[in-house]
Length: 134
Image 1 (cartoon, helix red, strand yellow):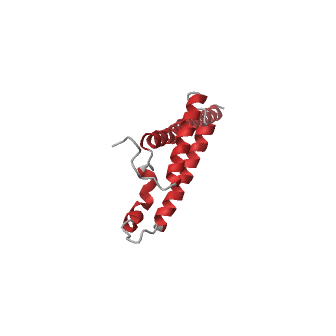
Image 2 (cartoon, rainbow, N blue to C red; image 1 turned 120 degrees about the vertical axis):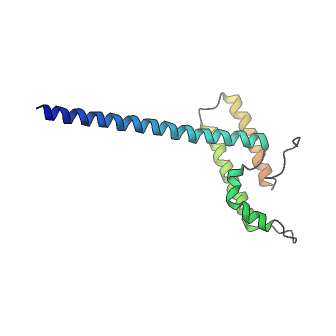
Image 3 (tube, rainbow, N blue to C red; image 1 turned 180 degrees about the vertical axis):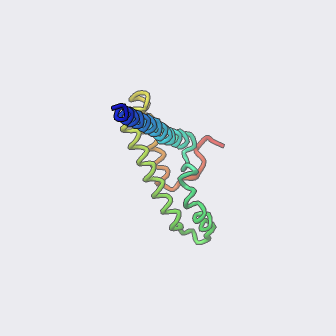
């Protein structure tokens, strides 16, 4: 009888430990995921440029092809532009739906700024310094 009680207690204790560890891990993952989105939003709004971590995968190829004298747009650069705009569109969708924005006025301001930046990037000004910055 006592063996059964010990087995049941050990099972319940193990289940509780697994649930607590899973809850802790999911909380850490969500904080990192949401935190990174908010850091990206802040960086994009502040600099109006493509974040460094977005452009790193194509940066080397774009740098190699940037020195072309014929003025043609490098395929890697066009691919990078489309990828950056898609990621920005996902961030815009996040701002539209998240409850982690202070109020609707802040949401509308963020959306207006992001839409303006998206149109700049669509015109090919993804890596230029924003107006008024040094």
